[in-house]
Length: 159
Ligand SMILES: [Zn+2]
Ligand SMILES: [Zn+2]
Image (cartoon, rainbow, N blue to C red):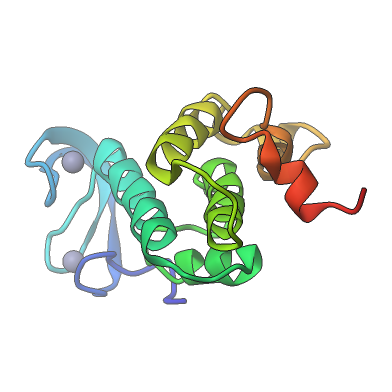
């Protein structure tokens, strides 16, 4: 896992400016105020960062053949866009379980299930784990009402 004080795109050190400036996002080209960029001038906006995090979850969950949700989670966490305490974990945890379920033989429309997991995990407010006694990624384990998440509990918890 690379250090977080470096650019996600080129790994150059980050530079913090005393004042905000309008910066062009290196991924989408949008202009946003920020006071941080890398030494090479890269800046990534919030929306593009979120897109990259979710893309990493999807890419690895769709490709993996592992039946081990922890191994899948670790693989996703190696992606530089995934931050240790980032809100992406609200989606990541449940997504790994769904992929492992499918790989363990459970009939599951994985793209549909991941899409629903993304919707549900995305409803958890950013930073709420710091303000409440819950780690909300763990709530993803029980975000299972209705199909297609219903099989999770039965598949992974003792009766
Ligand atoms: Zn850079
Ligand atoms: Zn952007």
